[in-house]
Length: 141
Image (tube, helix red, strand yellow):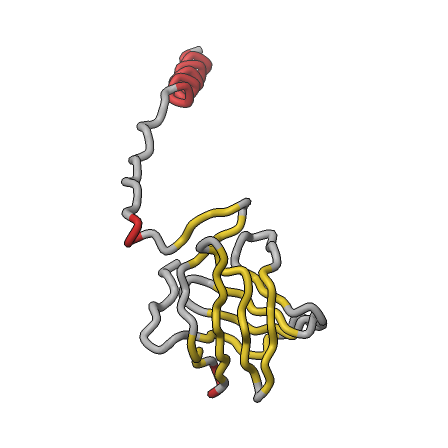
């Protein structure tokens, strides 16, 4: 009859252990303005990204000129395959900066370490892994 009492004791130990509180998560220090390239506005991220010529995979390039209003990148002029497009900021579900033209032909998505140009009709990538020369690499997973 010792077996049932050992099972009860083990169950009680597990129940008590599950009631204990875990140590508090370490508090991250608030980033200094010079260290904070990302801000939030209405669930949308505002990344401090440069204008200029982005070099992409397969030897492709995209020219991006950013327009700001009240410190928010609300529009870009995009140069692609010899043509120029005006893309407006479009709220995205993820909050990442997403721009599209009024005709819906082009979509530019900004990530902190790269950009991506999509066909607005099919969502297929036109230019991937677009980076400014000397830009940072993606974070480790």
